[in-house]
Amino acid sequence: MQNLKIRKAISSDLPLLRLFEQGVIEAERPFDKTLKQDPIQYYDLDLMLIAKHIHLVVAEVDGQPVASGYARIEDAKPYNAHAKHAYLGFMYTVAEHRGKGINQEIIKELKRWAKEQGIAELRLDVYYSNASAIRAYEKAGFSKHMVAMRADVG
Image (cartoon, rainbow, N blue to C red):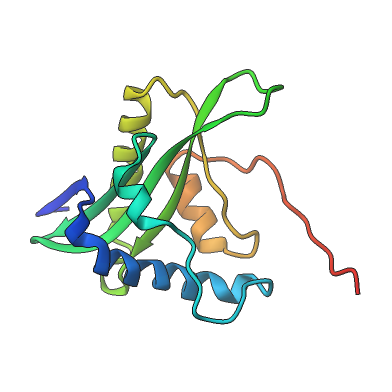
């Protein structure tokens, strides 16, 4: 994609990142009946901007921020063959720029950063019913690994 730039998020991006966060929540709400009613927040964006173990990025097209994502280094379970992995999240692209491969470019940048940190595995969560997101992540090299299940007690 021409005029696409992936860069580290900065503090002046916060107002837009908060809007992107609400976009993520709005997109995920139909898949998750357990979410509280608005207003809710998923992320501590202030912390994410300064944390050394998190790489928060923004994609710009012609100088305008249009997408976001992050990689966060996490400890693996003690029984895993790897000690740490990078968890990806906050994958959001504004509606008019979806389907242009921007999310794929963000994933490439997050993967590059993770490798630079000595990380060999990426993980993410996606709602089971979100077929379009699953296809996009499979296109980026991810494969289904586990299915989380839930049940109401009442």
